[in-house]
Amino acid sequence: MKRKIFFLTIISFIFIFSISLLIYAKEAQIEGENLNVRSGPGTDYDVITKVNPPEQYPVLEESGEWTKIDLGDHQGWIHQDYFSITEESESQNDNENMMEEESSDNEEQDGTSSNSVTNSAETYEQMDNSLAGKKIVLDPGHGGRDVGAIGASGGFESDYTLKTAQILREKLEEHGADVYLTRSNNQYVPLTSRTTHTNLLQADVYLSIHYNSTPELPEVQGIDTYYLSKRDQQLAEYVHGGIINETDMNDRGIEQRDLHVLRVNHRPSLLLELGFISNETEERKIQSRAFLEAMSRGVLMGLEQYFR
Image 1 (spheres, rainbow, N blue to C red):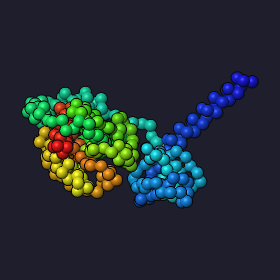
Image 2: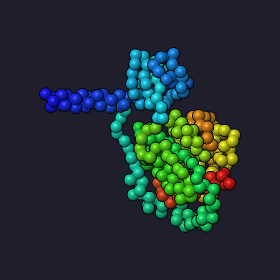
Image 3: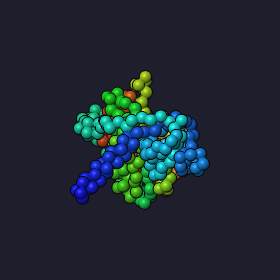
Image 4: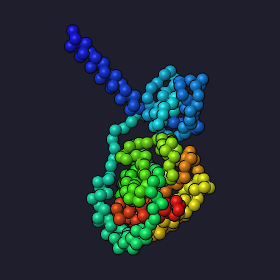
């Protein structure tokens, strides 16, 4: 009898766990602008935040016409009239190994040779200690089912942004910064979760890392830097200038732009478009570790100036 009860208990646990996995496999695709997220399943509950299309959030629970979603650091309820359900795909694409294997060849092909990298070594070594103890959030754009732009070679922006953030983290940590990544692997992270984490952390700087693409204009090259708050203009000038100096990339300038991750971010923040992967030459550079290290040095120099 005891064995039977134990067996039934195990079966029940497996069943409940399976149902839980099925629920978590669903995603709520937001369709309503400034959609209220409430603390409970009904309009009598307080509004705790707002979400916007095309954001997606894991579904946790359903109650009548209301659905509970996971916002990353907290949870809330939204009405079913203002979103659609999509099934989470388990398939992932990861070109990181390919990037590692090709990096030595690409370093010979692209314009950033080991000699040009060495030219700035003295300046790099002379950097002061103003980054020590600074909290820097690096946000590799896209991830998981959201691959971002697709390069001329078929590479995914989400893979390039993650590799860039990992190398940049190494360099920042070498200079004493406390670095936080919004994702450390090929996973999907909602935009709101990325910025909420930054705000709660009281980060000193937030950098959203992206790559550009214009397949209809494959000759376009260069780096753009975006800021929103006027207080961040100088940060943009320093970081953008550092990158251009270290990489000798085409300078497309800095621009004030109303982007979601900048708009809801209460910390000093930039969105960096670090090149066009729709351009074959530029994509080859981006696949090179030597080039990414040069870019990282540029970011470091810009941040050092900003924190002085």
